[in-house]
Length: 106
Image (cartoon, rainbow, N blue to C red; front, side, top):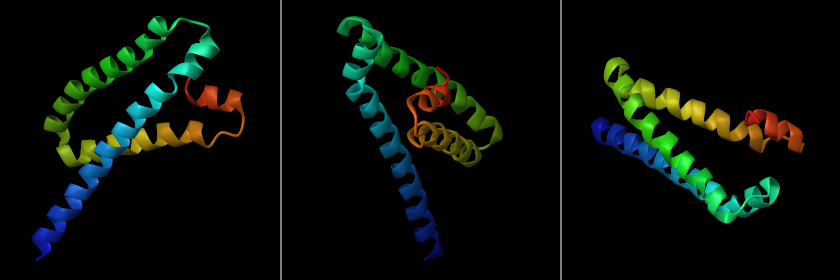
């Protein structure tokens, strides 16, 4: 009985991580018109934002997979999830545009 509960909890955590990553990618795509207006570029040039985002995620996935092999998958998943949530919530909790930009490193 405890094994099924642990397995279900593990599946819930993984599904939550995948859902949050999918929502994050969707937010980037939905923000493209605002990014285009803010930067004053064409839609083609702003599309590189999504391509760059996907490239970084792809490269980091392979490298962090290796760290997962070295230090343990669960430990690396927890650390990655914590960094992601911290990086996601800091700009979202900013009251001013300059604070949001500072949190994003802009």
